[in-house]
Length: 454
Image (tube, rainbow, N blue to C red; front, side, top):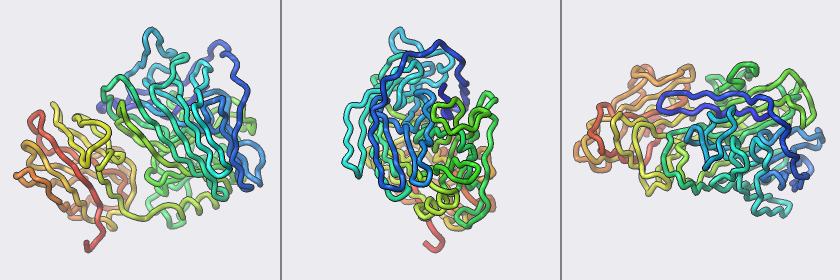
């Protein structure tokens, strides 16, 4: 059975939770494996071309056994994306009842009825492994995804670098609002049962790590957490395992499912982790991202991930896409952007949010926004969240008056003027202060954090 972290979606501010699958009749048999491997002597990774090219095998020279769980087609290491509607139906084909809450959910390996995804193209020159496939809609029987998945994989010592692309061609052009995306879903053997990360206020200082726990028997089996060094790892009792690093991320979902602690890749118990971004997943989007995996001891994983992590302050330029910002209570022209992000106001104040990117307040006292507006927008409010905050609130916000001429200007907002702007900052949001007239547009070119003295 598949166990997914992304069984919740924000519709406005309503969190819709899904559930764990129930036992069903025996599915049809799977095709024989058709493996393709990369092996540099330190780490070996294998993709099954009979299952959409999903990762079904990882081992290392010191641990030669496979650590990837493949108990069903919803495990493996695989791409998995989400959007509406809920439920997602195609003609007279309806989703399996226990998965109806997932909505539109193409995944790389196959569907919950054991129909595998189809590989369209693959190349392996011994240095890079490329795979292109048509995924399957997980909740439905034998319904191909209305998109194409691609992966590029290279090795560097014990480090696995993967680049991903989803190209959508949906006929349904509706924007269903931001949904969490698994980037990717990672399922390992349950022997790697200790989910470890750094979740504290002092990243990159050698501060104590956190053992993240979960209650797999609850309706929501996984734990959501912020890894403030941008990595998480599944390791065994000897602190060896697989690390997952997301340079532009930090939110993870994960845990262990079942009481077993097995090294069998086909065992029903499993360990899981996924880096998460929330995205407005457009009908025609070309969505690309990178994720890095490290095989080794916990100390080695942390050291390598921290060496890869940039220390630059966040800067978002809306030349082509939303830069992982999301939009609620408004509309835009969709993907791709054309050198600016034009947000059209509806019947409620638009809410723009960039979730889960970390910086210390004292390192970035000023926010610089290049923007314009069409129509009457006297001011916007910028919110921030600290590590211990569950939500945005007015106490942690600052108002930025806008020039009435509506032309493009570069504005500086002194966040440090607020006594509430301190510690580790984890997210930003922007709203108009008042409700503008319907059809008014807020036009963003860039948002950048600025160091002291700039």
